[in-house]
Length: 102
Image (cartoon, rainbow, N blue to C red; front, top):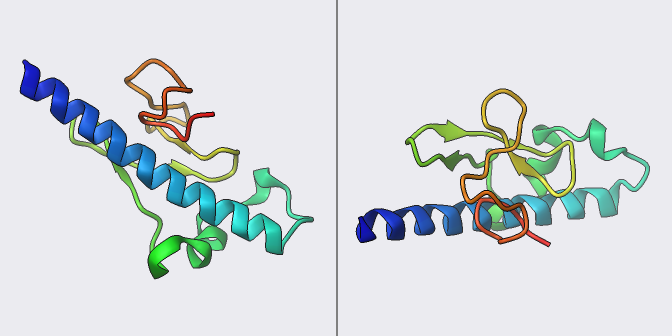
């Protein structure tokens, strides 16, 4: 049980780090394109701004093992549960696990 919780925490921490990197890319894109509405941002627009010269939008692995996409047309970016809703099994959008936090 303890190892499972540590693994879940690690997955949440990794997801938060991925989201922070996407958020950095999103903010850098918006700095260069201040007239673009956040709702009009696409992954293709953000990818060139991602840290570490990423060539694709990263995904996040859910606790079930599924790969989940990141939605960049809102700020901060969120993990898409697969149906356009927020994925965060930690049940808090501000604890910095599974989210960018505040």
